[in-house]
Image (tube, rainbow, N blue to C red; front, side):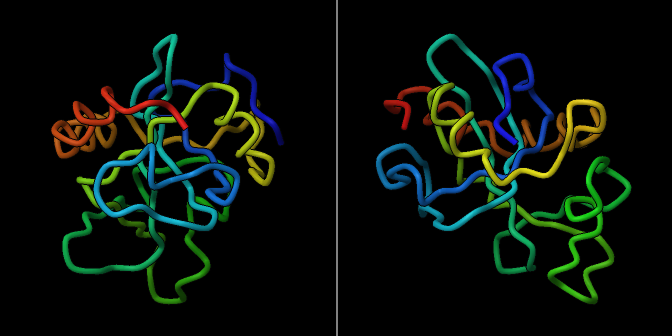
Length: 145
C-alpha cells in the first residue's frame, strides 16, 4: 500500500523497500539494505526520519517488545524468527532520512491499513527517541534520499 503524507507520523511503522533508494547517502551508521519495517521518528517539510527495525537479536541492537506494538500480525509477532516472541530490534545509531515521495514509494509492500496502522506505543517511541537522539540529529543534516 502506498501511504499518503497524512499517514506518516512519529510512531508509525511502515515496511520500506531500501532497494528503491540509495541508503548509503541518506543514513547514519551502517546502511541497511532490503526491505525493513521502519519506525517514523520525525516528520518535517523536507524529510521523514525513519529507524530501520531488525527481526533478530545482535550486538548493539535494542529491543522493541511485542506488547509495545500494534497493527498487522507480521509486525506485531515477528514470524521470521520462531522463538522471538514478537520481539524486534534496532540499532540506535542507524536512522534513514527520506523525502516524503521516497517514503511513499518505498512503502509499496506495506501490509498495514489506515484503519489498523502499524505503530509503536507512545512509551516505546519516547524510549527510542531518547536512544537515537544523536543519530536523529545527524540525520537532520543529511540530504533526503
